[in-house]
Image (cartoon, rainbow, N blue to C red; front, side):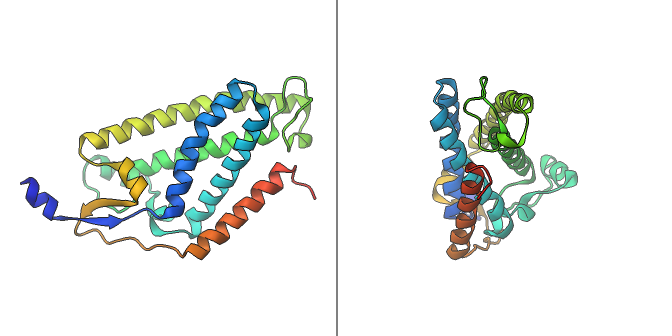
Length: 222
């Protein structure tokens, strides 16, 4: 039976290199941001935040113009699709399933909020404000800093759910971590391979993301 199921599957390339690099870079930056914040390494904390800003900007652009499995339109679905997946009625897909898409969307939103808050945050004495803090009052900047701190726990919670889901799939012999490293996974023969965007589009998106990050990191002023 297991041999028959294996024969009914094929190895498909599902994740492009830009998506994988962005994913693992964000994964690595999360603990770095936590460590620098808890050890009063504000300069390095902000530098990591600017890199994260560039990565998130790229991911948002790539979600619009990138490869099929990276595009939000290909995997973000409504409640009906999520319920169908939970009930086992959804068709297999090359990329994120409808339930996993909710996790991805929630994590991206939380990370974007975290970076956005960090750009306006003000330290306790107001001597080393963030680059966009000049656009808000000191009191607002301090309130933003507190929200920046609290939102990190939301990110931790979402990360915990994400890891738990990966563990659940691993018990069902679905190696999602390996697929995000290699870009390939085993899928039913009926699943069509996704379309991939040109590397030149990725380079253009990266250039735009870097420019946006630089502009905001320098106080959004020329």
